[in-house]
Amino acid sequence: MFTLRFFALFSIVLIGCNQSRENTTPAGSVDCIAPENVDTTGAATYRTVRGALLATRFGSFDELKSVIQIEYHGGDGTSNNAAFVRVRHCSSRREVISVLETGTSQGDIYKARYGGAFWDRINVLFRCPYAVANRKDMERIYTLSRRRPEWYGQGDPAFFDLAKSMVENINTPESGFRNTRDSTEKGYLNSFNHILAQAFITSCFSEKLADFIGDTHERYRHPELITGKFTVAQLADLEEGPVDNYVDIINNEWGQELGKQLKVKYGTNRETQWTPELLANYLNDMQRYFSWAFQLGFEPFRPEDEVVRLFSYKLAEVRKGRMESAQ
Image (tube, rainbow, N blue to C red; front, side, top):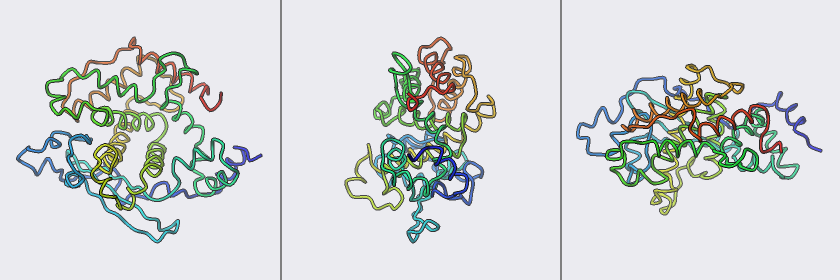
């Protein structure tokens, strides 16, 4: 039987994965001239958003490209020279950079882990030992990102539910929902969800693992993001096309930057005991960031809030090793 122990043994000696190409400029580390510093008209609604993006503020792919920079690189198909795309966003004089290249996808990993053939496992082992070496943390993150009331009780929340609670906490509807599309699932909810999940993974595990998970997801769903070879229909699709997905990629990077700051503030790691008090404080710090980024007001989270209490319980159970994949 091809066991996980076999995976772990080989992950020690193998490297690679096409997981992340080194950025020539580290994310969030340089000054830059942001569009909002140049535009004096204030006519575009996306100019009022900073340190993040809202997909619902863009009416076309060309409009998005006026705010972010997208550079496609073809490569030659080899593992050492794979195709990749570099996406940059400059806001409030700070820049984040995301590099997405061809490589192992979320689908490849899921197939190898859950019922795939022997060669599916071999493929992941040799192409992406990083996933094998970090399989336990990835299982923890997968569990936190899914509702599993059968394991953790009625009302079990996931990252999405924390983001949904943040939308419900907005107490400035007259300004926050002036753009009606912002209230849809692709508005605040989607941006909150990506930034929150990436921040939490970075705070509890590492920026590298957060980046890896985000990249494998994007490769699986939308490989065209790497080449830029979109159909006319994809370009016109504001809900699921490149506008939505490049916004997700950038928000993942801003989430990692926020997660690093909160990791330092709270000293968190995978062994942290997340009391309801700690979780409420962490989520309120996230809301303060969203207040700055999107000019919103929020009702604060409290330790006794049901979603805080239940997610805190789930974190404790996952920390003890009680995860979906272990059932």
